[in-house]
Image (tube, rainbow, N blue to C red):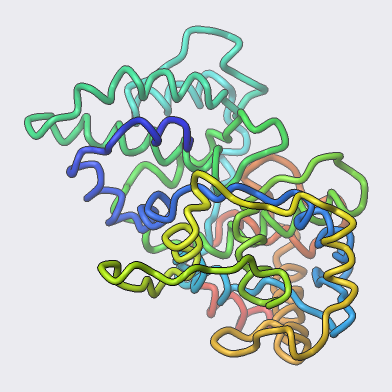
Length: 346
């Protein structure tokens, strides 16, 4: 995704469509190079039973409010639901739907994986062909098709990546049919639930590599724990300070999109976490620690257990360790906000 964006400027008409969907913030923040040692040290302290990091200073977790404040993803609105019929679709039907919505139908069999997954490489190659033809005179139909493919590329490459790093679920096409409806969904909830699931699988040893929206985990650690923060140099006088989403400041002030002086030292990261003290955590702005996290997770768990019978992840399989993170996609829960669902659960 980021290699594709690095050498290309999106046409203003495409940018306008992406702004309407609410996902352009992710492109504005740009790429954050991951400190894998920090990610590994945090995952070692993750407890899948409670979805909380166990630290010397107490318990901490990433909350929905963190998702909204750090990356600007919506946490209110309709659940990212998947109709029952889509889970039963064949590969041919998915390809027909892809062609209808984007005008793209790969002919190479290697571009497919199973019934509902497609290679990101095939999508990127098609975007590279379409990109030069996007002008001010381009029909709205082609602008919408290009935008849908770009969002599908973003879902598979940034927000919902799998361990292969090169596959995306075509089940997202259900939500890409009407671009104007995308802001109505609580995408931040889906991103956080998917990240929880992948961290759990890695911490339990059911998969070797971790995936998900890991920049969220890294920025959360930087914002929450002062000892883990790289130094932020002062802004130039002619550059206004960034406000929200907060993740933007790590790119604006440090240039992490290109060069990041990551420690990449696992023993050091482990020691830093082991030596954390109460004075080295930040509680202002967004609450993360024990008293807030425990209530947050209890409500989350009740909601998830209640709908476990109808839950199924858009990426394919239910969470292997139980209903706790099967939240991701709710089947046949139409016109139901998260608030209404929580009230129903109680």
